[in-house]
Amino acid sequence: MSGLIDPDSVQGSEVDFFGMSIEHQEIINELKQDVGLKEICQRILEKKVIDQAAQERGVTVEVEEIQEEADRVRREMHLERAADTLAWLSGHLLTPEDWEEGIRDRLLRNKLTEVLFASEVERFFAQNRVNFERAVLYQIVVPYPQLAQEIYYQIEEAEISFYEAAHLYDVDSNRRHCCGYVGTVHRWDLHPDLAACVFSATPGDVIGPIAIEDQYFILRVEEFVPAELTQEVRQNILTKLFEEWLQGEVNYQFHQ
Image (cartoon, one colour):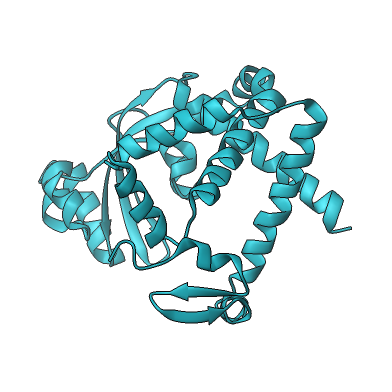
């Protein structure tokens, strides 16, 4: 279906969508009815704040950077030929200029994030180190309190192993196949009640049953992984700091 939409048609008062004309006002009305207009407006305000902050700090994106990122995305999406790229853009109602502008906005946001908060990452990590600890976790989730209590007693009495019980009883088929293995989780990945129990346990402990929203959890902590400032953690911190700053700026500039 590629190439059936003329990207230039989105520049006027209507969109030519596979031969069907759709007025811009119809799009706005649909966004309103779908409770999506507020989100779009919020994103526009955020873009205004980012552009202003970048201009004040001399943060810019060069043409070469946009081209490099566009080439990377094309390779990732296997858009090897220019015709493939144009067909993909046409199918998403985008002109090449629209696409480049979107890339520019993402790169500018990333650059501004680094300028504003790169120097604060290590301090934030040190002050919140406990939140970046991780646990290798297994769990069993069942829908009935009596069943959860019976499973817990059987595990405690060594009548069945935790892993066997998970394979037999967990409500999630994927976890059943993995004998209850959840993986390595951060504190924030868990419901607060579960996190409090998990991160106060000793490796090898069986915890539970814990009731969360009509489900009953039995947990086993395999080991704890000390907090480490990895690239992933660094990016999570940068994103958190930037989002908090951005929301504060939007509220201050536009919602007073």
